[in-house]
Image (cartoon, rainbow, N blue to C red; front, side, top):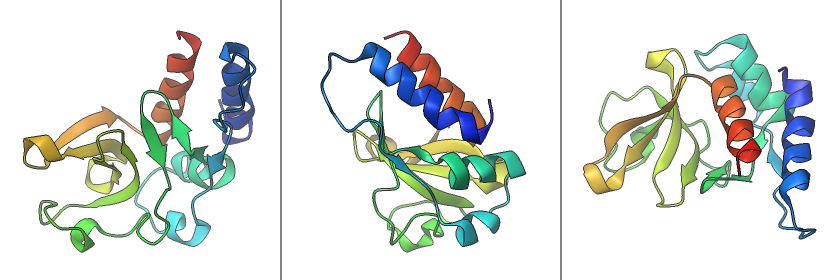
Length: 141
């Protein structure tokens, strides 16, 4: 799947699962090109973030790009994040844990679990893998 087709494919999955309710689940967040181009991740992952973006809200309880003041900023700006982290925030989960791209781990998607002393928890291996997972989750609902 390429970035141009992801958004349409994901939205089609949502509409096929909907009960004719407009829950605004087809809203997407495109990340700032200048910040994305500075990330140490694959070009395809960069394209996904800037061309298709990520859903503003996605099952199961994920939100992306809600705080534009700190997206893709170093996490040293946030208290309690382990020092030396090479992560950039892209969203949060339903528990308020920060979802990040970990540049030191080939662009893997992780979150910091506040219930476990900000331990690093793996979500997915890349932005594109996250996109596939979001689609797979919608297919099986």
